[in-house]
Image (cartoon, rainbow over all chains, first blue to last red; front, top):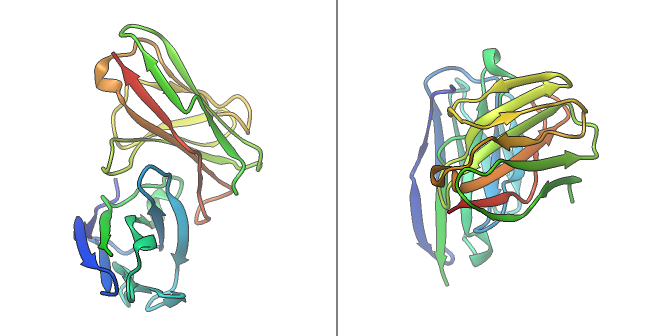
Length: 112
Length: 112
């Protein structure tokens, strides 16, 4: 399967602090998606990045795709308790387009 | 809200029983997926399908089987349930590769 490392595995922050999760691949990716899963819920799509060096923003969330298309990050500015959940990256490489596999996820907890 | 449904939501069943977990979507999506996820853990792809009469095994070996006779329906069957099958099973669909995936609410299976 797709070789990707997602770090950190866990992150606990105080409300208002920033948070970043990284997804690192050993091979060049076609694109990468990000999903959020609330505790007890199911994964929900956040965004897809396709272009080298792409940066996309959704309110307090900033998504980046590296220039080499091997790395991606999700950054949350000034976390809120509603940001609690597990964030998964879902990378796609050219030879495995039909599959949809995920990184191990980063569990974010926020102390109010 | 996505039109993808899983039944039952919760199932407690005895060892050795045959079970079928249902997954249906009304969006006409070709690509469908089954994942196994323990609480707070990663999403393991166990089966996927890229259209009617196509099924493939995922990255995690599973004793379950799937079928795809109709576009909208992707049931998962366990011929003889065991306690090791206790987990949450999530179904997802998407219209094509490199598109957003939609997840069902999941089935929480407990085998006693």
